[in-house]
Image 1 (cartoon, rainbow, N blue to C red):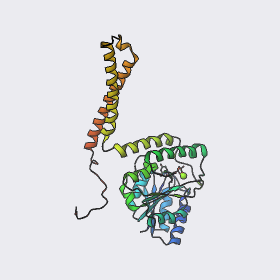
Image 2 (image 1 turned 60 degrees about the vertical axis):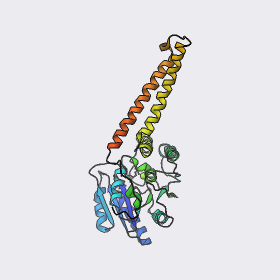
Image 3 (image 1 turned 135 degrees about the vertical axis):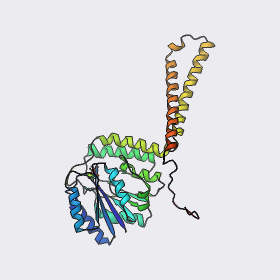
Image 4 (image 1 turned 180 degrees about the horizontal axis):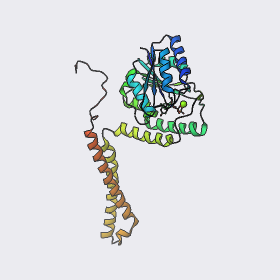
Length: 315
Ligand code: UDP
Ligand code: MG
């Protein structure tokens, strides 16, 4: 199968018929063998009913329905598990992404050899203040910390080699950072394509203001887990040692000035409390490192590596 189109959706019953007709048209024009996987993320409108009706007309359409709303990441993860195509395309269900981009997104994977290609909504039809400006900030932060040169990390329209989606696990709100997850999994050829972005035709956005905070917190966790997930002590131990050492030097200075230069009132000097504080923080960090290390050592994931190829090894 050439293509799997994975579409997470939450209360988008109005868009679905139009969207699937458009996808079908593109697939027929290009002669692709394909499947469309709709993941209904616990909608409470008629989305699932619509999916079942669409499936009667076109058996390339498949559906997964969650019992409740788990979020876009969970929906994508289930869709990725089920996808059978050589190339996987993800897109939003709200018709803000255009299916006309699919052939080129696929070509970049198959012919140009990209592991994944991310859409870039260069011209956006969203609210400037609540969406476009925060999105710029947030992309700049993601770009700086991950060193991946993308303008738009969180575009719903993306294409992947099948191997990429089978190697990564998306949970929480990590759908914003799939390029980073792919990079951590060893897929470095990440491309970008300017895509047409359209105004939302039906329904409303499903992400409110809390995504600003959650988005940044998730960026911290993903960078931390990727870098130090398997060796937490290297992070906490370093900062713990530095803090402790700084405290130790200040104490030495205080002690020397008391005994050799007879400066009185050691505990009355503000710097005494600074020394006390950094030493306590230092040992706390050290302890956090040890505990992290114990957790990492007991995790069933501790020796899970992604093996690309084997030669002469049978198991
Ligand atoms: N979505 C989902 N589960 C959720 C929230 C959103 O599957 O909990 C889907 C939604 O139906 C849409 C896509 O994720 O297909 C993108 O959502 P939305 O258009 O609301 O985001 P925006 O374009 O406003 O960033
Ligand atoms: Mg949208």
